[in-house]
Length: 178
View 1 (cartoon, rainbow, N blue to C red):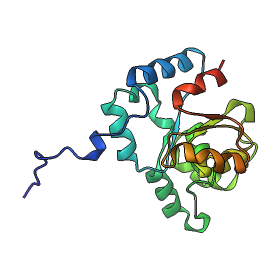
View 2 (cartoon, rainbow, N blue to C red):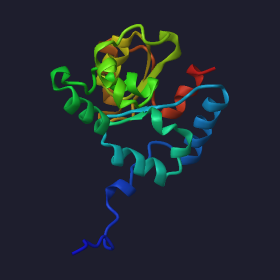
View 3 (tube, rainbow, N blue to C red):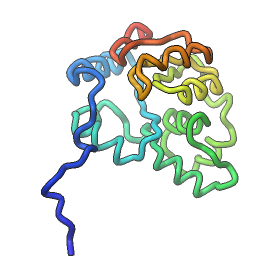
């Protein structure tokens, strides 16, 4: 018997948008036009990441090889259980997003996390303490957006842990990418 899903689309299709979509598209296109590559490193499962980005028309701005989610982290942990935990604040997610989603390199991403790239080439934009700690472990710039679960209340926590670049919304990051 096939289950029907005619009744509800589910929350995955009703993602809470943190800024006007057209403004987000414009920002992403400006960054791409300036030569920046944009990836995603998230603690959400892959479907919960891809579907909203696709539904909102944002997925074309990202190379799927540079989208790393909790699904890939879980797979890496299953492949290399002795290296657990690989989720944030372990930098694994960011390294895999930057260097590309290559399962054959997961062990390297987990064990060789320094000197894999020029630090000035990466900026982590995130909304959590785990994002900040990952950036610190990698020695890269961090921009904290106050749009996560804690909202503006996250500012104090992030600042107390060394964050200096905080913005109210993701749209405010543009000035950091000249």
